[in-house]
Amino acid sequence: MFVSGFLFFFAAICGLGAVVSAVLITAWLDRRGTRTPFPFIGSFLVGNIRRYRKATLETAGSVGPLFYACVVPLLVALLLVIAGILLRRGWGL
Image (cartoon, rainbow, N blue to C red):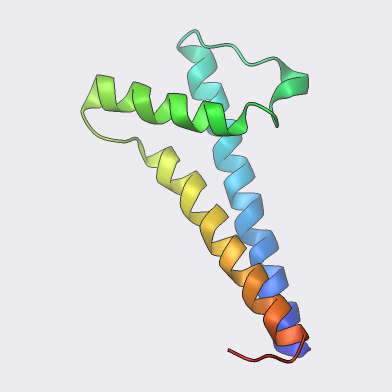
């Protein structure tokens, strides 16, 4: 129970980092002319990440750092939540 609480806490921190990166991606896209209406930021999240990746590949020749700063914490948070659920149910790892 104690370890799963830590896993959920770190998953929340990773999720917060991903949200901050997603907001920075949206601001980057807004500066370059791709506007995202504020009420729909959550629904355009995946599309904005995809647009950011494509735009940075075209301009710089490589994927921008915000792409990895957004995608990696989301994947780590997913893994931490799954591990926390498994530990809480007593299945172990």
